[in-house]
Image 1: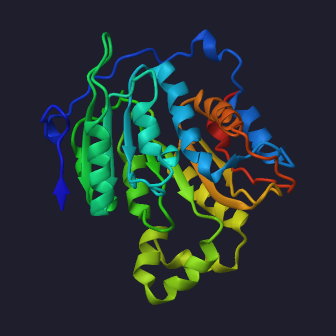
Image 2 (image 1 turned 45 degrees about the horizontal axis):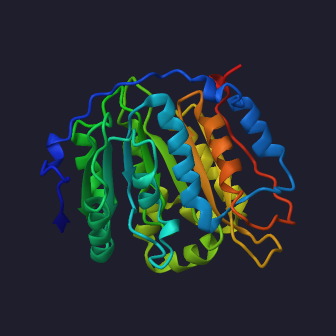
Image 3 (image 1 turned 135 degrees about the horizontal axis):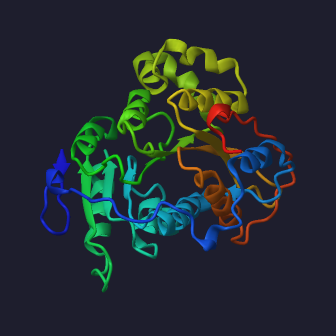
Length: 322
């Protein structure tokens, strides 16, 4: 297991970040949709004429975080499966896009990958970042060559993510690598402040095929779903499985849990749903910011989809804004 420290030579336990910044929305976001409006659009917006394509999902994450840190002025970014999924296409590498985005308000980074070569690429990515500019906060990063399901405990115990620290966890698993217990630990870490925001990727397109391969590894399947009830998913549609996952994350007491489809390009005919990016947050501005990021991330020259798509949405009514 390889373990790296940040560029200043600090170990993990030395990464203590003080939370500063305004939690209110500036005039820049005065036109944001309310959570109820976002929920309505995701539920009824069909045909989905402006999807985000699979090779633009990193752009979606980058845009959302850039919007959000204009509000928080700080933040901690956790990427549990952070290595490049397509080394020949660095523009699709989420960790790279987030690290290089401006303004550099995010201050703390935890980048994890179980693959040795990808972990090495993560360290090189951090080591080659340009120096801090005048008036910028000091940034720190820890790269883990380890299974995220194991190192998540060390990250949460570091003291970096306080009750007031804005924190975001990208769980861009290839298929079933992220244990449900890991999701629970992230959701339960904070006791009084806004929870750690989750960007949970559900691999919709090849879900059923992968589940059929689980028959020889029931323990792996149970770890991903959190119980043997994963067997019930085989008879459900992609959308129904997404709805089930939305309900489960919502049960972790997030105020807003919204599934955003990530589409596969298909020679201009629209393609199919590759992933659902399930966004979970307690912040009232978060759904509007994600909707804005989603609308902007699609506009990168992709052809319009011709297929209809209706998403079933399960918000948390008691906590929805009026």
